[in-house]
Length: 437
Image 1 (cartoon, one colour):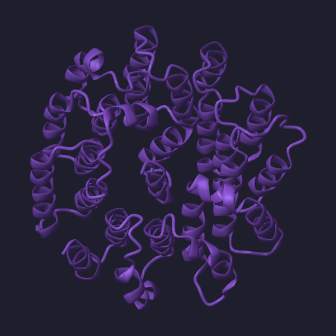
Image 2 (spheres, rainbow, N blue to C red; image 1 turned 30 degrees about the vertical axis):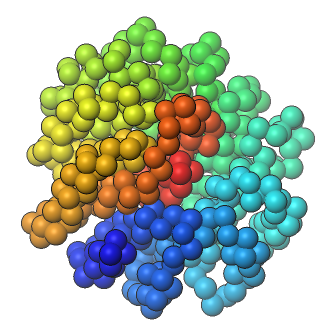
Protein backbone atom coordinates (compact mmCIF):
# COMPACT_ATOMS: atom_id res chain seq x y z
CA UNK A 1 0.00 0.00 0.00
CA UNK A 2 2.78 2.42 0.97
CA UNK A 3 4.80 1.57 -2.14
CA UNK A 4 1.81 2.08 -4.44
CA UNK A 5 1.35 5.54 -2.96
CA UNK A 6 4.99 6.39 -3.70
CA UNK A 7 4.77 4.95 -7.21
CA UNK A 8 1.91 7.35 -8.07
CA UNK A 9 3.92 10.31 -6.78
CA UNK A 10 6.97 9.27 -8.76
CA UNK A 11 5.28 8.56 -12.08
CA UNK A 12 2.24 10.83 -12.29
CA UNK A 13 2.96 13.86 -10.12
CA UNK A 14 4.73 17.11 -10.98
CA UNK A 15 7.35 16.31 -13.67
CA UNK A 16 9.98 18.27 -11.73
CA UNK A 17 13.09 16.19 -11.08
CA UNK A 18 13.21 17.44 -7.49
CA UNK A 19 9.90 15.64 -6.83
CA UNK A 20 11.29 12.44 -8.37
CA UNK A 21 14.38 12.75 -6.13
CA UNK A 22 12.12 13.01 -3.06
CA UNK A 23 9.93 10.09 -4.18
CA UNK A 24 12.88 7.75 -4.72
CA UNK A 25 14.53 8.84 -1.46
CA UNK A 26 11.27 8.26 0.39
CA UNK A 27 10.96 4.80 -1.10
CA UNK A 28 14.46 3.96 0.16
CA UNK A 29 13.45 5.07 3.67
CA UNK A 30 10.16 3.15 3.69
CA UNK A 31 11.83 -0.07 2.50
CA UNK A 32 15.12 0.37 4.37
CA UNK A 33 16.85 -3.01 4.85
CA UNK A 34 13.74 -4.92 3.66
CA UNK A 35 15.18 -6.16 0.30
CA UNK A 36 11.88 -5.03 -1.25
CA UNK A 37 13.17 -3.31 -4.40
CA UNK A 38 10.26 -4.09 -6.74
CA UNK A 39 9.44 -0.42 -7.30
CA UNK A 40 12.96 0.43 -8.45
CA UNK A 41 13.69 -2.73 -10.46
CA UNK A 42 10.36 -2.68 -12.32
CA UNK A 43 10.70 0.95 -13.34
CA UNK A 44 14.31 1.05 -14.57
CA UNK A 45 13.11 2.32 -17.96
CA UNK A 46 11.94 5.54 -16.30
CA UNK A 47 15.57 6.22 -15.29
CA UNK A 48 16.32 7.15 -18.89
CA UNK A 49 13.92 10.07 -18.53
CA UNK A 50 15.21 11.45 -15.23
CA UNK A 51 18.20 13.58 -14.29
CA UNK A 52 21.63 12.24 -13.41
CA UNK A 53 21.23 13.23 -9.75
CA UNK A 54 17.91 11.38 -9.56
CA UNK A 55 19.77 8.27 -10.75
CA UNK A 56 22.34 8.88 -8.01
CA UNK A 57 19.61 9.01 -5.33
CA UNK A 58 18.05 5.87 -6.89
CA UNK A 59 21.36 4.03 -6.48
CA UNK A 60 21.71 5.11 -2.86
CA UNK A 61 18.10 4.11 -2.13
CA UNK A 62 18.59 0.71 -3.77
CA UNK A 63 21.68 0.10 -1.62
CA UNK A 64 19.74 1.22 1.49
CA UNK A 65 16.98 -1.27 0.71
CA UNK A 66 19.60 -4.07 0.64
CA UNK A 67 21.48 -2.82 3.73
CA UNK A 68 22.93 -5.86 5.49
CA UNK A 69 22.42 -8.22 2.54
CA UNK A 70 25.70 -10.09 1.98
CA UNK A 71 24.69 -11.36 -1.46
CA UNK A 72 24.07 -7.79 -2.62
CA UNK A 73 27.45 -6.65 -1.27
CA UNK A 74 29.28 -9.66 -2.73
CA UNK A 75 27.99 -8.66 -6.18
CA UNK A 76 28.74 -5.00 -5.52
CA UNK A 77 32.08 -4.72 -7.35
CA UNK A 78 30.80 -6.65 -10.35
CA UNK A 79 28.05 -4.02 -10.61
CA UNK A 80 30.66 -1.24 -10.56
CA UNK A 81 32.42 -2.75 -13.59
CA UNK A 82 29.29 -2.99 -15.75
CA UNK A 83 29.40 -0.30 -18.42
CA UNK A 84 25.71 -0.73 -19.25
CA UNK A 85 24.72 0.75 -15.87
CA UNK A 86 24.68 4.53 -15.37
CA UNK A 87 27.72 5.88 -13.51
CA UNK A 88 25.40 8.00 -11.36
CA UNK A 89 23.42 4.90 -10.34
CA UNK A 90 26.68 3.09 -9.47
CA UNK A 91 27.97 6.10 -7.51
CA UNK A 92 24.75 6.18 -5.47
CA UNK A 93 25.12 2.48 -4.60
CA UNK A 94 28.77 3.07 -3.69
CA UNK A 95 28.16 5.99 -1.32
CA UNK A 96 25.43 4.21 0.65
CA UNK A 97 27.61 1.10 0.83
CA UNK A 98 30.26 3.27 2.52
CA UNK A 99 27.78 4.35 5.21
CA UNK A 100 27.60 0.78 6.54
CA UNK A 101 30.74 0.58 8.68
CA UNK A 102 30.31 -3.07 9.64
CA UNK A 103 30.30 -4.21 6.02
CA UNK A 104 33.12 -1.84 5.07
CA UNK A 105 35.21 -3.60 7.75
CA UNK A 106 34.29 -7.03 6.31
CA UNK A 107 35.17 -6.02 2.75
CA UNK A 108 37.92 -3.51 3.59
CA UNK A 109 40.89 -5.02 1.71
CA UNK A 110 38.90 -5.76 -1.42
CA UNK A 111 37.21 -2.36 -1.18
CA UNK A 112 40.50 -0.41 -0.95
CA UNK A 113 42.00 -2.34 -3.88
CA UNK A 114 38.96 -1.72 -6.07
CA UNK A 115 38.76 1.93 -5.02
CA UNK A 116 42.43 2.44 -5.89
CA UNK A 117 41.79 1.00 -9.35
CA UNK A 118 38.80 3.34 -9.75
CA UNK A 119 40.92 6.30 -8.68
CA UNK A 120 43.53 5.55 -11.35
CA UNK A 121 41.04 4.99 -14.18
CA UNK A 122 39.50 7.71 -16.29
CA UNK A 123 36.07 7.37 -14.65
CA UNK A 124 33.13 9.73 -14.40
CA UNK A 125 33.55 12.51 -11.77
CA UNK A 126 30.50 11.28 -9.84
CA UNK A 127 32.25 7.94 -9.19
CA UNK A 128 35.29 9.88 -7.97
CA UNK A 129 32.96 11.81 -5.63
CA UNK A 130 31.66 8.59 -4.03
CA UNK A 131 35.17 7.10 -4.02
CA UNK A 132 36.45 9.99 -1.88
CA UNK A 133 33.59 9.64 0.61
CA UNK A 134 34.21 5.88 0.78
CA UNK A 135 37.92 6.30 1.48
CA UNK A 136 37.21 8.85 4.22
CA UNK A 137 34.89 6.48 6.09
CA UNK A 138 37.52 3.71 5.92
CA UNK A 139 40.21 5.98 7.41
CA UNK A 140 37.94 7.85 9.85
CA UNK A 141 39.78 8.23 13.22
CA UNK A 142 42.45 5.72 12.15
CA UNK A 143 45.16 8.02 10.75
CA UNK A 144 48.07 8.71 13.09
CA UNK A 145 50.09 11.03 10.83
CA UNK A 146 48.48 13.15 8.11
CA UNK A 147 51.86 13.64 6.41
CA UNK A 148 52.34 9.90 5.95
CA UNK A 149 48.70 9.06 5.19
CA UNK A 150 48.25 7.41 1.81
CA UNK A 151 44.46 7.96 1.94
CA UNK A 152 44.85 11.69 2.60
CA UNK A 153 47.27 12.11 -0.31
CA UNK A 154 44.94 10.19 -2.61
CA UNK A 155 41.90 12.27 -1.62
CA UNK A 156 43.77 15.58 -1.98
CA UNK A 157 44.54 14.80 -5.64
CA UNK A 158 40.83 14.93 -6.48
CA UNK A 159 40.48 18.57 -5.35
CA UNK A 160 42.48 19.80 -8.32
CA UNK A 161 40.11 18.04 -10.76
CA UNK A 162 36.52 18.96 -11.72
CA UNK A 163 33.94 20.44 -9.32
CA UNK A 164 32.07 17.18 -8.60
CA UNK A 165 35.24 15.25 -7.70
CA UNK A 166 36.49 18.22 -5.67
CA UNK A 167 33.20 18.37 -3.72
CA UNK A 168 33.64 14.77 -2.61
CA UNK A 169 37.31 15.26 -1.75
CA UNK A 170 36.62 18.47 0.22
CA UNK A 171 33.99 16.81 2.41
CA UNK A 172 36.07 13.62 2.69
CA UNK A 173 38.94 15.51 4.36
CA UNK A 174 36.60 16.59 7.17
CA UNK A 175 35.26 13.05 7.64
CA UNK A 176 38.74 11.53 7.52
CA UNK A 177 40.05 13.81 10.29
CA UNK A 178 36.78 14.19 12.20
CA UNK A 179 37.47 15.64 15.68
CA UNK A 180 41.25 15.39 15.22
CA UNK A 181 42.07 19.07 15.94
CA UNK A 182 44.90 18.89 13.40
CA UNK A 183 46.84 22.12 12.79
CA UNK A 184 48.57 20.53 9.79
CA UNK A 185 45.22 19.85 8.11
CA UNK A 186 44.17 23.42 8.87
CA UNK A 187 47.17 24.73 6.91
CA UNK A 188 46.40 22.39 4.00
CA UNK A 189 42.73 23.42 3.87
CA UNK A 190 43.53 27.14 4.03
CA UNK A 191 45.92 26.62 1.10
CA UNK A 192 43.24 24.70 -0.86
CA UNK A 193 40.67 27.45 -0.17
CA UNK A 194 43.04 30.04 -1.64
CA UNK A 195 43.80 27.88 -4.68
CA UNK A 196 40.32 26.66 -5.70
CA UNK A 197 38.27 28.52 -8.30
CA UNK A 198 34.90 27.01 -7.26
CA UNK A 199 32.72 28.87 -4.75
CA UNK A 200 30.97 25.67 -3.64
CA UNK A 201 34.31 23.96 -2.89
CA UNK A 202 35.34 26.87 -0.66
CA UNK A 203 32.16 26.40 1.36
CA UNK A 204 32.59 22.62 1.71
CA UNK A 205 36.26 22.97 2.72
CA UNK A 206 35.31 25.35 5.53
CA UNK A 207 32.57 22.90 6.57
CA UNK A 208 35.29 20.25 6.80
CA UNK A 209 37.15 22.49 9.26
CA UNK A 210 34.02 22.39 11.43
CA UNK A 211 34.30 18.58 11.53
CA UNK A 212 38.03 18.69 12.28
CA UNK A 213 37.70 21.17 15.18
CA UNK A 214 34.65 19.52 16.76
CA UNK A 215 34.44 20.34 20.51
CA UNK A 216 37.84 22.09 20.53
CA UNK A 217 36.84 25.53 21.80
CA UNK A 218 40.16 27.35 22.16
CA UNK A 219 41.63 26.18 18.86
CA UNK A 220 38.42 26.71 16.89
CA UNK A 221 37.97 30.20 18.35
CA UNK A 222 41.24 31.31 16.72
CA UNK A 223 40.11 29.89 13.36
CA UNK A 224 36.66 31.44 13.79
CA UNK A 225 38.02 34.93 14.56
CA UNK A 226 40.18 34.78 11.42
CA UNK A 227 37.48 33.51 9.04
CA UNK A 228 34.45 35.48 10.28
CA UNK A 229 36.06 38.74 9.14
CA UNK A 230 36.51 37.50 5.55
CA UNK A 231 34.67 39.33 2.78
CA UNK A 232 33.57 36.05 1.19
CA UNK A 233 30.16 35.10 2.71
CA UNK A 234 30.81 31.39 1.94
CA UNK A 235 33.75 31.48 4.36
CA UNK A 236 31.79 33.42 7.01
CA UNK A 237 29.00 30.84 6.79
CA UNK A 238 31.49 28.04 7.39
CA UNK A 239 33.07 30.00 10.27
CA UNK A 240 29.70 29.95 12.06
CA UNK A 241 29.60 26.15 11.87
CA UNK A 242 33.22 25.86 13.06
CA UNK A 243 32.34 27.90 16.14
CA UNK A 244 28.99 26.23 16.88
CA UNK A 245 30.30 22.65 16.51
CA UNK A 246 33.16 23.55 18.85
CA UNK A 247 30.46 24.24 21.48
CA UNK A 248 28.30 21.27 20.45
CA UNK A 249 25.71 20.44 23.13
CA UNK A 250 27.35 22.76 25.67
CA UNK A 251 24.44 25.20 26.05
CA UNK A 252 26.98 28.03 26.25
CA UNK A 253 25.12 31.37 26.25
CA UNK A 254 28.27 33.41 25.71
CA UNK A 255 28.91 31.58 22.43
CA UNK A 256 25.21 31.94 21.55
CA UNK A 257 25.27 35.70 22.11
CA UNK A 258 28.24 36.00 19.77
CA UNK A 259 26.36 34.10 17.05
CA UNK A 260 23.18 36.15 17.62
CA UNK A 261 25.22 39.31 17.12
CA UNK A 262 26.40 37.98 13.75
CA UNK A 263 22.81 37.03 12.86
CA UNK A 264 21.78 40.65 13.53
CA UNK A 265 24.52 42.43 11.62
CA UNK A 266 25.73 40.16 8.82
CA UNK A 267 24.06 41.16 5.52
CA UNK A 268 24.21 37.69 3.90
CA UNK A 269 21.11 35.46 4.11
CA UNK A 270 23.05 32.20 4.17
CA UNK A 271 25.24 33.41 7.03
CA UNK A 272 22.07 34.29 8.97
CA UNK A 273 20.66 30.82 8.23
CA UNK A 274 23.90 29.18 9.43
CA UNK A 275 23.80 31.28 12.61
CA UNK A 276 20.40 30.04 13.72
CA UNK A 277 21.22 26.42 12.80
CA UNK A 278 24.50 26.83 14.70
CA UNK A 279 22.55 27.75 17.84
CA UNK A 280 20.69 24.45 17.44
CA UNK A 281 24.02 22.59 17.54
CA UNK A 282 25.12 24.50 20.66
CA UNK A 283 21.83 23.55 22.38
CA UNK A 284 21.58 20.07 20.87
CA UNK A 285 19.15 17.99 23.01
CA UNK A 286 18.58 21.06 25.24
CA UNK A 287 15.31 22.63 24.09
CA UNK A 288 14.27 23.82 27.56
CA UNK A 289 17.19 26.27 27.83
CA UNK A 290 16.93 27.70 24.31
CA UNK A 291 13.18 27.98 23.74
CA UNK A 292 13.14 31.63 24.88
CA UNK A 293 15.36 32.51 21.89
CA UNK A 294 13.13 30.46 19.59
CA UNK A 295 10.15 32.58 20.72
CA UNK A 296 12.02 35.71 19.61
CA UNK A 297 13.12 34.31 16.23
CA UNK A 298 9.98 32.45 15.07
CA UNK A 299 8.51 35.69 13.67
CA UNK A 300 11.78 36.98 12.20
CA UNK A 301 11.35 39.03 9.02
CA UNK A 302 13.98 37.03 7.10
CA UNK A 303 12.70 33.71 5.66
CA UNK A 304 16.24 32.25 5.64
CA UNK A 305 16.33 32.67 9.42
CA UNK A 306 12.92 31.03 9.82
CA UNK A 307 14.07 28.18 7.56
CA UNK A 308 17.20 27.67 9.68
CA UNK A 309 15.04 27.82 12.81
CA UNK A 310 13.20 24.67 11.67
CA UNK A 311 16.42 22.65 11.86
CA UNK A 312 17.60 24.40 15.01
CA UNK A 313 14.39 23.32 16.78
CA UNK A 314 14.82 19.79 15.45
CA UNK A 315 18.38 19.57 16.80
CA UNK A 316 17.28 20.76 20.25
CA UNK A 317 14.70 17.94 20.59
CA UNK A 318 16.34 15.19 18.52
CA UNK A 319 16.23 12.70 21.43
CA UNK A 320 12.45 13.09 21.75
CA UNK A 321 12.35 15.22 24.92
CA UNK A 322 10.05 18.30 24.81
CA UNK A 323 8.83 17.41 21.31
CA UNK A 324 5.26 18.56 22.02
CA UNK A 325 6.46 22.08 22.89
CA UNK A 326 8.80 22.10 19.90
CA UNK A 327 5.96 20.99 17.66
CA UNK A 328 4.06 24.19 18.52
CA UNK A 329 6.85 26.21 16.86
CA UNK A 330 7.03 23.88 13.87
CA UNK A 331 3.24 23.99 13.35
CA UNK A 332 3.50 27.75 13.04
CA UNK A 333 6.36 27.40 10.55
CA UNK A 334 4.31 24.84 8.56
CA UNK A 335 1.92 27.70 7.77
CA UNK A 336 4.65 30.14 6.78
CA UNK A 337 3.92 32.24 3.65
CA UNK A 338 7.32 31.31 2.15
CA UNK A 339 7.50 27.90 0.46
CA UNK A 340 11.03 26.88 1.41
CA UNK A 341 10.37 27.67 5.11
CA UNK A 342 7.45 25.22 5.04
CA UNK A 343 9.75 22.72 3.32
CA UNK A 344 12.22 22.94 6.22
CA UNK A 345 9.40 22.60 8.77
CA UNK A 346 8.03 19.40 7.17
CA UNK A 347 11.47 17.78 7.00
CA UNK A 348 12.20 18.73 10.63
CA UNK A 349 8.89 17.25 11.81
CA UNK A 350 9.77 14.01 10.01
CA UNK A 351 13.19 13.89 11.67
CA UNK A 352 11.79 14.54 15.15
CA UNK A 353 8.91 12.07 15.13
CA UNK A 354 10.82 9.30 13.32
CA UNK A 355 12.94 8.82 16.42
CA UNK A 356 10.13 8.30 18.93
CA UNK A 357 7.02 6.17 19.30
CA UNK A 358 3.95 8.42 18.98
CA UNK A 359 1.56 6.32 16.92
CA UNK A 360 -1.40 8.71 17.06
CA UNK A 361 0.73 11.78 16.31
CA UNK A 362 2.55 10.07 13.44
CA UNK A 363 -0.76 9.06 11.89
CA UNK A 364 -1.96 12.67 12.06
CA UNK A 365 1.27 14.01 10.50
CA UNK A 366 1.23 11.41 7.70
CA UNK A 367 -2.38 12.28 6.92
CA UNK A 368 -1.41 15.95 6.60
CA UNK A 369 1.55 15.10 4.36
CA UNK A 370 -0.68 13.02 2.06
CA UNK A 371 -3.12 15.92 1.81
CA UNK A 372 -0.28 18.25 0.74
CA UNK A 373 1.01 15.77 -1.85
CA UNK A 374 -2.43 15.38 -3.42
CA UNK A 375 -3.06 19.13 -3.58
CA UNK A 376 -2.30 20.33 -7.12
CA UNK A 377 -2.07 23.95 -5.95
CA UNK A 378 0.93 23.30 -3.68
CA UNK A 379 4.35 24.22 -5.11
CA UNK A 380 7.03 21.63 -5.84
CA UNK A 381 9.19 23.12 -3.03
CA UNK A 382 6.48 22.39 -0.45
CA UNK A 383 5.81 18.92 -1.89
CA UNK A 384 9.53 18.14 -1.79
CA UNK A 385 9.61 18.88 1.95
CA UNK A 386 6.44 16.87 2.61
CA UNK A 387 7.76 13.86 0.66
CA UNK A 388 11.13 13.88 2.40
CA UNK A 389 9.43 14.26 5.79
CA UNK A 390 6.95 11.49 4.94
CA UNK A 391 9.71 9.08 3.91
CA UNK A 392 11.78 9.78 7.03
CA UNK A 393 8.74 9.36 9.28
CA UNK A 394 7.92 6.01 7.67
CA UNK A 395 11.45 4.70 8.24
CA UNK A 396 10.21 3.75 11.73
CA UNK A 397 13.40 3.73 13.78
CA UNK A 398 11.64 3.99 17.18
CA UNK A 399 14.78 4.04 19.36
CA UNK A 400 14.70 4.13 23.15
CA UNK A 401 15.86 7.34 24.88
CA UNK A 402 19.13 5.67 25.95
CA UNK A 403 19.83 4.47 22.40
CA UNK A 404 19.12 7.94 21.01
CA UNK A 405 21.40 9.65 23.53
CA UNK A 406 24.23 7.30 22.58
CA UNK A 407 23.56 7.68 18.88
CA UNK A 408 23.48 11.50 18.72
CA UNK A 409 27.00 11.65 20.16
CA UNK A 410 28.46 9.32 17.52
CA UNK A 411 30.61 10.56 14.63
CA UNK A 412 28.29 8.91 12.08
CA UNK A 413 25.24 10.73 13.43
CA UNK A 414 26.92 14.14 13.52
CA UNK A 415 28.36 13.76 10.00
CA UNK A 416 24.98 12.53 8.77
CA UNK A 417 22.77 15.19 10.35
CA UNK A 418 25.12 18.07 9.46
CA UNK A 419 25.46 17.00 5.83
CA UNK A 420 21.76 16.19 5.48
CA UNK A 421 20.46 19.56 6.68
CA UNK A 422 22.83 21.25 4.22
CA UNK A 423 21.15 19.56 1.24
CA UNK A 424 20.46 22.99 -0.23
CA UNK A 425 24.16 23.32 -1.03
CA UNK A 426 24.44 19.89 -2.67
CA UNK A 427 21.37 17.73 -3.40
CA UNK A 428 23.24 14.38 -2.98
CA UNK A 429 23.58 15.34 0.69
CA UNK A 430 20.09 13.97 1.35
CA UNK A 431 21.65 10.48 1.05
CA UNK A 432 23.51 11.18 4.31
CA UNK A 433 20.22 10.56 6.09
CA UNK A 434 20.97 6.84 5.69
CA UNK A 435 23.81 7.36 8.22
CA UNK A 436 21.14 8.20 10.83
CA UNK A 437 19.12 4.98 10.50
